[in-house]
Structure formats: structure tokens, C-alpha cells
Image (tube, rainbow, N blue to C red; front, side, top):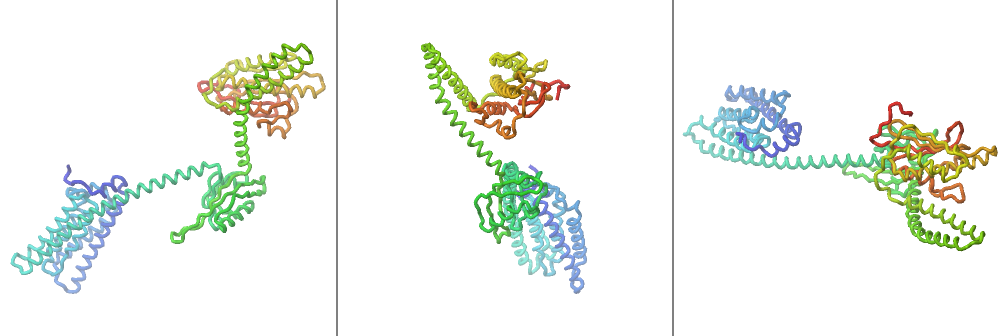
Length: 576
């Protein structure tokens, strides 16, 4: 164990956990300033006594002058006043301890000795070094400072001699003062420990508050709803990125703070804030932003006022939650579709078994009825049963949970296989009615083989139906045909395109292409393209429609962009 002994809890906590630039350094600087002020006062007292003609020892003046100079230098010179850490004041062997506490003890003891017979007691001066040692040093060093101060008072009585009539009284006074020094040292140690605990708790609370603030800010920034905090002067104190995007005409606002009076388009929002301040809370309301060079935007606004407290100097603030009404309606529609999908899956599950029984019974009837008319009826029943079975399968496919990781497969071989099977089942008039363009080498992608087969078949069926309609409407005797191509898209993707010639799909129909149960045919289920999109999203693929030109003709193209397998690297000269 070192001679310094255990350090005070305040010094340990503040120096080790908060650093020397925290409360420890500030307290050290405060004590240095107090010593400098005391040195100046002692020097002025010596000068005043000399001017008044008092009987003062000349050496006392020079001691006060030297003490004042040293304490001023210690307090003002940055290199000297900088606290180097708790170890520099932790014990009697530390030079900085003697440069501060020890210097005071020696100086005050000398002044008390020189003025022993002058009737002026300097015992109160020793409180400063004792308190400084109790707050900034170890327990052992603080008690040592109190002991040295007591010995200094007692040693100052020696020049009076043992036969002095007042010696007993002065010894009693010195003993009482020494007891007070020890009480001050112990009290300073306890107060320093309590201050250390409180500051450590405050540091923990501050760190927790900062963490919570950062977390709240992150949550607000990531919210899809816009958040505005507005004062009574209509100045926006805070706005998350979503709110800046909703209030911007063409792009998000970039000003850190702005006023709602800045743009005329925000007029209805200004009225909403004013009403909210008057009523404190209000029901959700739609507000329209009429921009000059952009389409109008309707926002659903929810607001609430946080009343400030005058005793705390806080002000009233209005918190607004903004949401694009179109986005809100889309989310409601998506939730309805999800609920409808779950209901449809339950219905499809209940229909499957009776439908199988109908199909089996119809097959038995077909065998026992030789009449051609009856055969036509059983054939009609069989065709509608197959149609219902296909719809049930599609609904059950959508309801299936997207579990399992995607498989790595060769898109070239699977597309070639599926195209041959599809051409065989469609009974095409000529082989060139299906035009296939595949790259020479394998293209490894991430997808489920059966699901990719389902996507490809749905797109081919859809393209072949529209190609037949276009050829029929052309009245030129041309045969319908569809195109199927596969091409690399850089190093990360492979593009699968299904193309059919003919007029482009009308915009009124295009916007509903991938919606469920939307079909332009009376006998269509409206689930084919919707299933394609859902399956693509499961495997991080993308499907888009566009009017395009292929094989020298204009027409409609559905592009499926597939993600490459992670271990697959496309050649550097791959087509973009």
C-alpha cells in the first residue's frame, strides 16, 4: 500500500469516472482561487497595519507577499493550476499536495508564530487547507492536514515561554481549534463522498436521458407519419424527414427551422394549428396543400397541444401528426385485401372437398350416359370444375406462408423446359408461335422452381390470350405469337421478358393490372398477375409492365427481374 492511503470517494469517482476536466478540476480551481484571494487579503492587512503604525514584524510582510505571489501564480498560470489527477493530491509525498495544502500550513503556522503576542489569532486560516485536503485528498492526507494545523497552533505558543500567564488559556484555545480541524476534515470527507455519489447518479441519469433522446429521435425519424412541433408563433421547432417530404412542393424541405407562414400552400394547415391551440385537442381532419407547380396533396392531420408551465418557463407547443391521405387509403385497402385473402383461403379450403366429389361424380355420369347431349353437359360440368379447381389452387397458393429459403436454379434450363411444356399444352398452330431467346450459358438465380414455373405459365397464358385477340382484330390473316427472352442485367440480376405484339394496354387498365380479382374478361379470376407479383416479392424479384418493342414489332412486355445467386458472378462484359 502506498503512503497516500485510500483516496477520498469523491476524488476517486470524479477523477477516474468523470475525468479531471469534470467536477474535480472545477473544485480544485475554486480552492486555488480562494487561496489567492486569501493571500491578497493577508497582504492588504499587513500593508494596512503598517500604514496605521501598528507594531508588525517585518518578516510577516514578506511572508504574506510571497504567499500572495505564489497563490496568484498557482491560480492564474494554466500549467500550474491544471489538476493532473487525484494521485497528485493523494498523499504527503506528492509535490502538488505540499504546493497547495502544505504551503498554506507552513505559511499560516509561521504567521501565527510571529504574531503570537499580538493578540490576533490566525486559527481560522487553517480551515482552508484542512477543507481542501478533505475534499480533494485521501482520508489519511486530510487527517494529516488537521494534525499539522493543530501542531502549528501549538508550536506557535512556544516563543511565549512556559511561565506566561495566558499560556493555559491559549493551549485550551489551540486544543479546541485542533478538534474543530479534525471535525472539518471528517465533515469535508463525508460531504465529498456524498457529492461524488450524487454526481455519479446524475451522470448515469444524464447518460440514460441522452440515450432515450437519441432513441426517440431515431424512432421519430423512421416514422412513416410526419411529425411537426409548432409554437404559437407558427414556427416549426422540429420536423422529421417524413413531414419535410409531405410539406415540400417537389422535394423535401431542407431548412432546419421554418415558419408555416412561409408558403401560401400551407394556409389550411395554419388554420388547423390555430384551432388546435384554441381547443387544445381536435379530431383528425383532412387538410389540402394547394401547391403552385405541383399537384395538390391531401393530408390527414391529428393534433394535440402540450401546455407549458409558467413556473418552469416552458411554452405551449402543438404536436401534429401528418399522413398522406392517398397512402392512408392504400394501407386501408391493403388491410382489407389481406383480410379478404384470409377469408378466401378458408372458403377455398371448404370448397375443395365438395368440388372433388362433384368432379368424381361427373366422371361416373359421363361413363354411364351415352347420349351426346348428356355428354356435352357432363363436359361442360367438367370444364367448370377444372376452372373452379384452378381458382381454388390460386387462392390457396396466395394464402400459403412464404416459408423456406429460395433455391438456386439455372434460369436458362428451367425457362427452356417450361416453354416446351407450355407450347405442347397450348396446341400452337406453328412452332414459331412461341419465339424463345435464351443466352448460351447458365444463369443461376434465387427462386423456387415450382413458383417460377407458375409465374412463367401465368405470363405466357396472359400474353397468348392478348396475342390472339390482337391477331383477330388485325383482320390480316396473321398468326398470333408470343416472345420469351432471358438476358443478364449486370452482375446482380437476370431479366425474364414475356412479350406479345399488339396495341398497348390502356392506362385505365394498366393501373389495375396487379390488383387481385380485377379482370377484363367475364370468365377471368383476376388472380394471375396478382399471383405473379406476390411470388416475385417473396423471392426479392420484381415484375413490371411496359409498352416495348421486340422482334421488330410494338407490343406489351412483362419483365421479371430475378436476383442472381450469391455465388454467381456475371462476366464483366455482360449486357446491361
